[in-house]
Length: 130
Image (tube, rainbow, N blue to C red):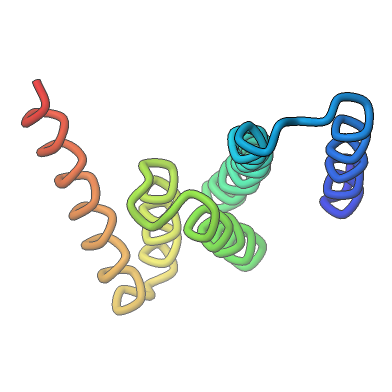
């Protein structure tokens, strides 16, 4: 299903829900948060597919086909999940590896450093919390 179709279906569902069972104003924020979270999870699944496809193409040496998919997945995850989310960092590392495989080391190095810094921070927070 195309993204536009999903957005329209989600909007119709929200309108139908509000019409059939009006939500008290204090609960609207929770409902909106749940809908947004479900939508982000759906979109992250799409980005995971694109990232996986990019990795497969890269392993086959099809770098020109892989790079746009990897960049699209990274942009989506950075926008929806945030720059420090583990899935975003994983996609960033994958793109950096793809660039390095093509000899684009100056573009790859900052991405490797950023992905590593994010992973180190997450590990530090995890160890500190236990």
